[in-house]
Length: 145
View 1 (cartoon, rainbow, N blue to C red):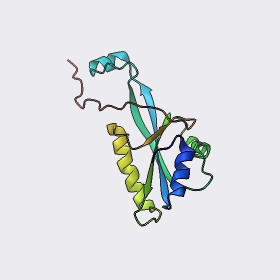
View 2 (spheres, helix red, strand yellow):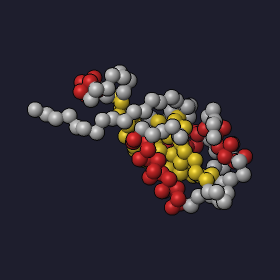
View 3 (cartoon, one colour):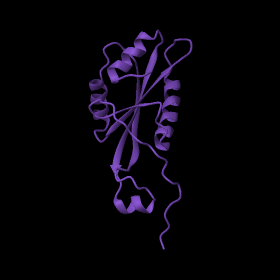
View 4 (cartoon, helix red, strand yellow):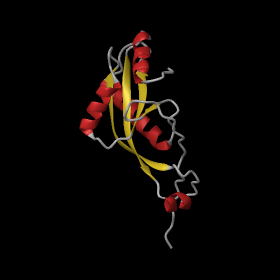
């Protein structure tokens, strides 16, 4: 689904005829200091680290607004900077179960940490879409001599 904002995504889910579960992974993006960035061979001055803080899910319901999602998320942890949004549905149009949602979220967390976010909407704290360039960070740890 292509949507211009969170509410548009919810509306597309509702109009599809399938019951959808909204999946959220909340992350904090921290700046990377120049020395660490250069040591890792990363040239992008805007590069940072992504830390998954928590996840959540809920069914897509009429009237669901991002402000409601933000309010609940802030009550859990106000430190998040971006919300990755995915959607889940079953082929028989039934609402994905709690167990299915947890499985989807586990996969989603792994994909976020791996930089594989092309299938997710990335929203800032105001619910506005943001463009993110994700790259894998080299797995080799720098050695200390």
